[in-house]
Image (cartoon, rainbow, N blue to C red; front, side, top):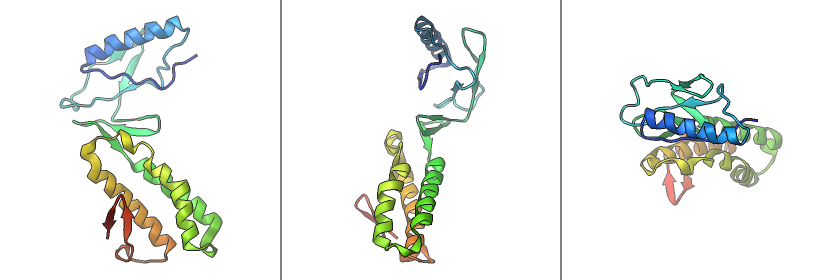
Length: 174
């Protein structure tokens, strides 16, 4: 049996190695182990660019370092500060909207399509936004406004983004 959805955070590679050992010891007591093929490391902080020394599991497998990882559906990226990538959320939102719009088509009123979008597609876009730091608020609002404008342009048959006014979070975007 494998351990699932464990995230270890440490201030240094050495501390992470020690934490990994403790975690593996505890998992072995529970007759569980880490899946080395799915376990990765990601550097975050001022020294994120230099190559880090490898972390080694108890069965002598090296964990690989990567630039991004997916944890509980949220994509985190390696950088000098904690940051998330919303590209996958946007793609999933567009996919959900296109599936919905393909079903109901243009025969349904725009009000119904907007309500369906709010109920079925917006949760996909917003999922995981709360884990991103406060300093990324501008990036998040840009993500939302661009995605929502694209959907509203399709619903209301507009060919230019300037024709759609978007109200989100008490702000009006043009």
